[in-house]
Image (cartoon, rainbow, N blue to C red):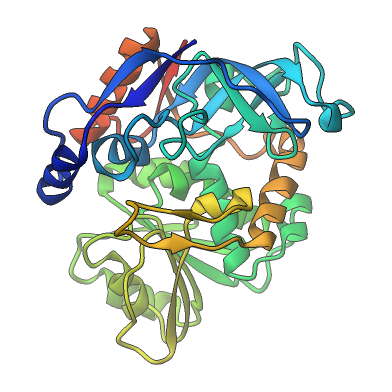
Length: 355
C-alpha cells in the first residue's frame, strides 16, 4: 500500500526543532507492506483523514524516521480479527484515531490502517466520512480533559440539568478541541465560559458557550474573575505562551488541564494537570526519543476512550463536528493541508482530506 512516511534524519530533526519550522520535505509517499492485524484488530480502508497540528509536528521533528504519519481517520472495515467479530463486519463504516507518527505500521495517512477493534466507532448513516474523521484527536482530547476535571461521564452521556450554574473556563473555545469541550461540558450541565478571538465569538456561542471573552484584552482576566468568582475547573486548549497562567489568574482555586506540561503554577491553590491524549491506547510511549518525555500506561484513560466511542453513534446527533473544510486530492491533498496548518491557516474549521 501507499503511505505518507517520515523521511528525515536526526540533523534535520534537530534543526526543525530548534527553528520551529520545516526545513525541506520531511515526509514522502512510499510503498510499504499492508498492516497485518491481530485477533483484536480490524483492517480499515481509509476514505478520509482529518489533519491536526500534531501531524506536522510529528513529521518535522517528533517522529522516528520511517514512521507512518496521521492520526484521525474514517473508512470501511475490510478485515476483522476473531476477538472483535461480534462488533465489526466487513463493509462497516468506521472512524476514530490512532497514535500516528510513532510506528512503522500505524498511521492514518495511508491506504490501509489497522486499529484496535474496541477503540473505534461505527459511523451512523447520517454522518459523512469527512465529518466522522473529525471525532479523533480533538474530540477525544476534550473527553479526556473533562474526565480529568472529574466531570462524570454519565452526565455527559445522558445530559444533566444545570448544576446551579457551575462554571468551567475553556481557553481557546474556537479551536477544534474547544468546540468539542464546549458541547460536552454543556451536556454535563455546566455553564461554559470561553475565551476566543473576536472573529470566533459567534462560532463558540453557536456551539453552546454561555459567554465568550477576548483573550487578548488586558481586562478579560478581571472581568471573568468578577463575573464567575467560583470557577474551579479550566481547560487550556492552547497551552502555549501565557494561556495556562491566564486560566490560573482567572481562578481563586482549582485545576487547569493543559495539553502541554506548563510547569508549576504560581498559586498554591491552583493545580496544573497536563494530559497527552495517546495514553488512551493503553501502552507506554515516548515523545522525541531518546531525549523527550516518556508516558506510562494509564488504564482508566483507555476506558474513557472505549466509553466515548461505544456511545458516539448516539452522541453524534447532538455533539457536532467543527466546521469541516473538506478537500479531495489524496496524498497531495494531505501534504497541502499540512502546509496550511504550518502557516496557521485553516482556523475556524477542521481540514479534512478525502482519499
